[in-house]
Amino acid sequence: MELASRKVVHLHVTDHPTLEWTKQQIRNVCFEEQPKFLSHDNDGKFGPFGRPLRVENAGERVACRSAFDARLRTEMGIRGIAPPYGAPNAAADIERLIGTFRRECLDRMLIWNERHLRRVLTEFAAW
Image (cartoon, rainbow, N blue to C red; front, side):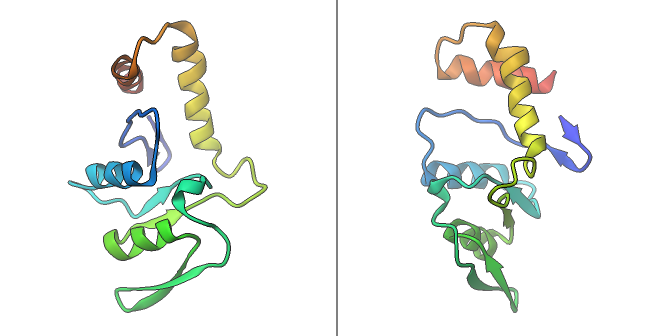
């Protein structure tokens, strides 16, 4: 699915998403083509949000909202973008995509296990 310049480049499922699992998924996606930006939510697994961290990348000092964003910037050159607090429409495109997956696909079938969920979502995204 492509929305202007946004597109789903990776779709994966787990029972217990952790920071290490998330980092591995980003490595898997960025193996061939590296994006400039990564949009993510304000989940606690990305590290504490609050006072910006200053990191140096390619000779320039940049501010990052979390330790996760700082690591993305220094190790991979990807700018992490988290939506601002109290702005529910800031990530409307991903919220709509998730809502479409739920309403049009998942609410209409019985999912047996993680493997089945992954396969159904992958086929639905391709459709």
